[in-house]
Length: 186
Image (cartoon, rainbow, N blue to C red; front, side, top):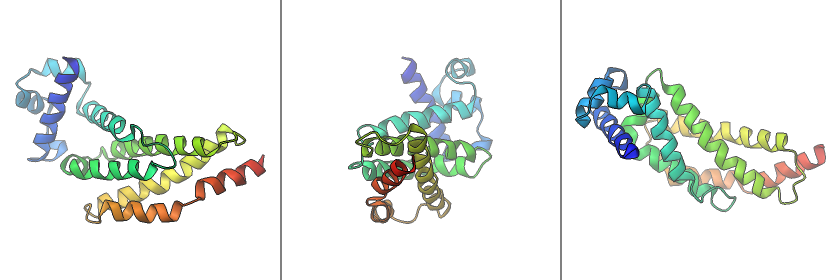
């Protein structure tokens, strides 16, 4: 029942975002739209940003399920782009408000998790330190998130599949080369 209520609150927020900007939506608006009282909202979330964080985390779990390997990272990123596009009103409203940092943190978290698993998989012999694997994943995370944020800023007009294809061409073999360089760095 708890997840059902959370999903209803999330759906109401998304519905309201089609009508007005995030900074004009109140908890009362969301609760009223769901036919609930404000206390029900507060039972599940601290504030609207907590609801957004929960929504992003739930979406991340769906996106990353089974798509965190070298063979599937492109599919994971494509799903991330498509999810952003599907939730465009929410994303654009979050992006254009002071809560843009939440969107960036979400993208950093999703990207890091995906890339860290790819780096781990590619370090077949386990010769690269955890610290160096973290560094490699973080390095690529910033590049990938930068591309996503640029795409969002340009109103999501470019085809996500084209972006992923271009990223894939650029990245082909880079994880292995980076790991090889760091294995010699020790």
